[in-house]
Length: 317
Image 1 (cartoon, rainbow, N blue to C red):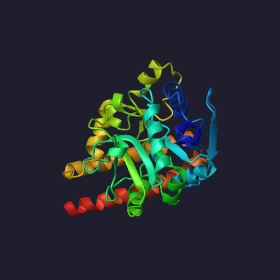
Image 2 (tube, rainbow, N blue to C red):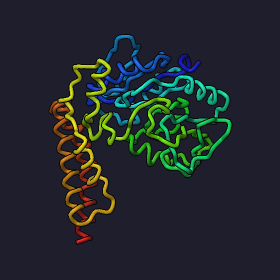
Image 3 (spheres, one colour):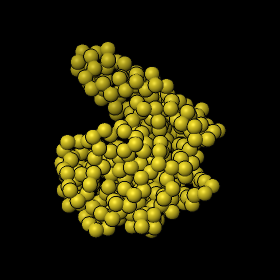
Image 4 (spheres, one colour):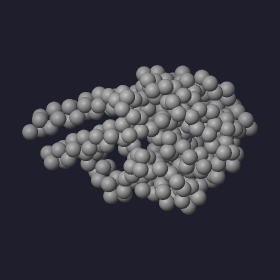
């Protein structure tokens, strides 16, 4: 059975410590046939949760995201893992029967690298009668490596890692890097990808719905959902929160691909505000010494982005 041959791996970091309690409380309530072994990837902090056997993997502050994941996967003893991020809060019961089907397919065909559990309706996916509502993602499709809920062959996932990469590089550069692999990527196909009732693992990963954490902050629907499930005393102040209106504004300005001159200025301002907010939160969470190290990484990354945008703006002028 899947629960005996699979581990749940939750990728996180010390910064999002306040998300762990609601995440695992919802897992306990809505995932009855969950894997017995649960691994939580952190930097230095440990965590326990009543009723769950959680193994914390402390990778230290200096490791990359991929290094932290590699260290955890090297400790896991099961053939398969279900990958998750710490803010994929369950919104309903997990369909364990469909997960069991995925497990059986992977046992029958060792070429299957992953069953991606998040729904997708991309028309480029190729239907295969033997895999029901799971379609094959061809080699030329982007983001075959991603960080959504997925059932992975552990050793195959390890082989795809580049230890220098952050999660965005893993998804983008990594997907390009493995495009010639002969492994099979199965993606859960659904016409309506936003229909919670049809999801194998029901959760929202789009900030416009108001669940999870985006731009390092809590979204507006989390508190209401947590309280409905008896989850109280979650510290929302530590990270801060975003309202529905502020999320819409961020999406409008941060991801405007063809802004006019004024739009470019507004986009740069929003990027600058976003960086400043992240820096402040890091000092509050990590303290000055560790916060400086974390903020140096952020500044190095965003300075390149802001400089590029500034040069493009000057060309337009």
